[in-house]
Image (cartoon, rainbow, N blue to C red; front, side):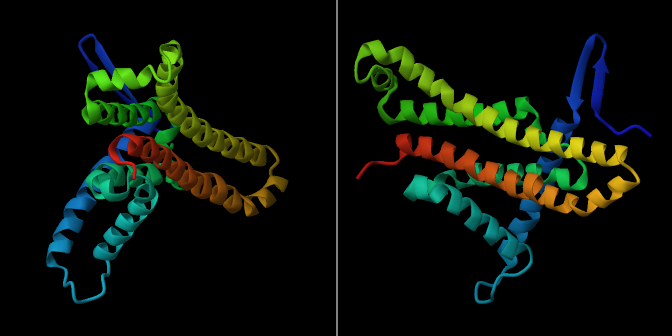
Length: 234
């Protein structure tokens, strides 16, 4: 039985191909949406006088995690952007952990990473324009002198490219290295069976440590550059 690599939908002359990474991301979105609805009802019934437990406890930990990542940068604006950042932080963290159960991580697909990075880029640029208007934003790109405008524009576009490639490179590299090691162990059987004793450490680093670190870095950088536009200095 061949593994499912994706889904192909054909309608007349139109063909839509959804790779496993995209299907996994959509599946995570559905599951997290169901969790949020269920958690919301649990919060409504929760007794504030008692210590949180179950779904309520998990929800509070997710809130604390998201605030720990973006709070230092966005400060008093953190709660305003918490629903957006918190949702994506949880989705990316779990997507980076899918390798533990043998599924392809959505963030190993450069198109998904690029989509997330472009969302961050548009959020930053939109708030930059809202802060002082389009003219002020264009003037900002011409500082400290107009001859540096091309470099300033390149610097703005460097952010989504950097976010995309850093996340893609680290997650994909971990997947490839893990696959190569398992292939090598299979070729070295029966002696290779001893190597499986060390594979838990392999997954601990590439699927857990590296995956969570990349999530932290992605949203720390995104919230930092957003804070330059939405957080008043002083």
